[in-house]
Length: 106
Image 1 (spheres, rainbow, N blue to C red):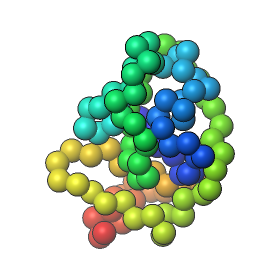
Image 2 (cartoon, helix red, strand yellow; image 1 turned 120 degrees about the vertical axis):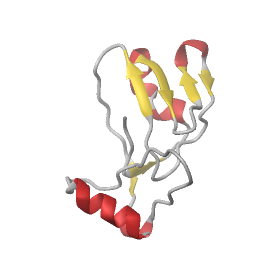
Image 3 (spheres, helix red, strand yellow; image 1 turned 90 degrees about the vertical axis):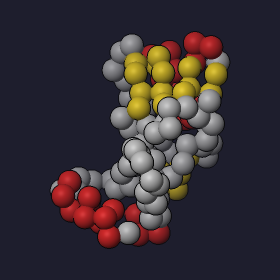
Image 4 (cartoon, rainbow, N blue to C red; image 1 turned 45 degrees about the horizontal axis):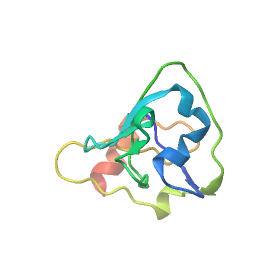
């Protein structure tokens, strides 16, 4: 699972993962919409601030993201009804219980 605390120039999931696309098998949002690079299919479309995404890769990899920092105090995470994958908008670590408490209070 991954999320991003930066606002990249291009929010399209296929563009966001372009540096590691050779290792991406599938990436999905919380609704199950999929990005399948093998078929050049991006059913996810644009990434959304505050959401988490699942990804399956053939090899471990990493890449750098540039853009505007998304200050958590200015970007509240709205939790929809049902299942959801919460993004993490912080640069450093935060105790899990404290983070969940913040989400609960929103």
